[in-house]
Image (tube, rainbow over all chains, first blue to last red; front, side, top):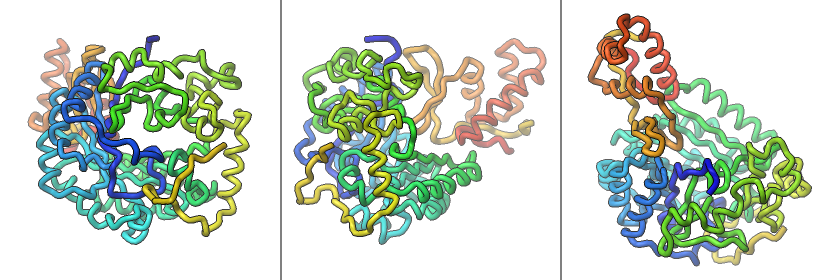
Length: 369
Length: 94
């Protein structure tokens, strides 16, 4: 292991099951084949081992983490290790007494998603009736004295309502508002022609967010995350492959990011067979894109390489078929044309593109480059 | 200047702990963390919401061997105001 890598955050994806069917879900397309395979004792050990590796934070997510009935035990153990514990939830299968029990177990913060700022639109995008209950859950979060992050994933079908999302966050006294554009991987890539916004509508939303950020300083933290497709340079995905983040999936694989196991040809290990330390320090999957030796041109000689590490490996794989390629969102990538073509489609969008909901029975083929 | 009777405290989203790997104190909040120096950590440990600002400055002055609390006060105030802007400290108004 070279210097500098350290687990700061464990992302525990407790289950891929979820009552929502968002068409931009960040779980893999074949999530139904990847069953929950970790017992409570496995997750407790994962938490202990992650903390020993240096983790300071744990994010309990999914799918919908509330579907595991050992969530309280996991929260309590994480907190006993002095981890900062954040629950990321749809809010759907939650009632107030359980939220109170989670708080009492040591939960530090709660993030609830909405799909749009009105019931009709939010329920349409989530593929299930959920909006009114989410609002109620967010009120409980505040009443119980827990910090609230309101998360809205943005795309062409809701970008215009960013001002209303901001107003809703203020009304709910959210401590933090995450306005995060969809990244076009997995389900969102399948639905890209229906979701990718044009540059002009993106600029309007971004402007509304920065005004709110200045106005709400000290009261509410406002974050606006651009879609990679509209950045000239790729993002430093996960702060670099295997540098700071460790993801454990419902079936026990330990990964550098949420979708690393969908890259063919990489070998990842399971926490039921190996310790987290072994996996983090020397497993082939984690070693694959650490350091600079693997970098292709134009990255290898680029003066940005220590800032963006060549971008997102999953995006490179999903768009070009080669996980070692320069992330095509970079304007220096020889395959940047793929992203430019998608932007052109978004500039003259058709309203007729249907959404493919997560879990839809239709076969979803992995898009080929 | 922060009023002597103000009772600053950490916001509910912030958690102070020692990072065992570095021995430094860190302030954790959603998806982020700040590494604190010894002075910052000492200040925040006193921001319990029970002590008033004046007694916090006096205690810090004593523990840092500073005979004139006024010399330290500016530093404490600017530190707390920076954290308050990030929503990590509350109660700077009495």
